[in-house]
Image 1 (cartoon, rainbow, N blue to C red):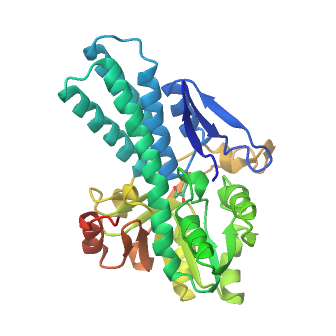
Image 2: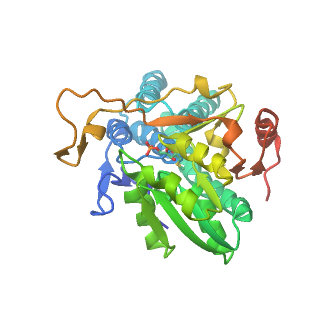
Length: 351
Ligand code: MRU
């Protein structure tokens, strides 16, 4: 499996996703600040992956702490949590993972653990978050495989693969699940301007797996759907609101509208850690605005003239009306999402 992120003794190691596919290099983060910077600068990206990175960054930061008293240690811990929370605003997995680390810290403090014991507990919690994410992706991949026909053409947007998670992927988890069931799947990957997650990362992952992949530029989706029968669209998510409205990579909304027009089922695949029942609808999801340079330049080449204004939202919101179903590790949930997503959290996990 792809090594997205791992904790080694005194570092957190992650593959540098900015450099793929031309270079396979690893970034070694020595402290919490390094990890926060890696999230912000997209060394690591993808909602579940940045949640795992934040948890590992907090655990690493606390492991490196020289505080001996629990009060000073607690103050440092809260600072590390705030540092991670300030990296990227949209993916709720980030805040979900930080909250899990906070709860783990509180339980340790409540139990009267020593600083060394708290460090051990935080390390274990971060690793558990990592391992559970892989398990969730595999489970949702197996459920999602059921919606994929035996000989399927599937379109995806951005990268919701092993690189965007602790491993296996969400949207690509569904594709991998179908392939593991013996289905023949051909994938169309939107290139995903401006950061090119589809062209660079999704295509890289799928080609490595031997899954037939065709990259298209984002403005080709409509023409493709008119000319080629597409069986389904499957994408990941950064935050799913209580009513099913879904924030995902910019361009997803346009794909959903086209899928609706062409009667192509549109699925969102995400673990429960991406569902935010405290956010009532898509209008309440904070959308990250990123640096203009991502739009003005490709690599070091400037595309736009000086003086042109740039709008660069990293995500858009797909209204729930366009979503055929939400595929999770607890099963496949359909409209009305206000009810079904609440039930998803009440469902007893299998196994
Ligand atoms: O800006 P990014 O690359 O972090 O955005 C990633 C996406 O939008 C993914 O589709 C989403 O996080 C789901 S990843 C399983």
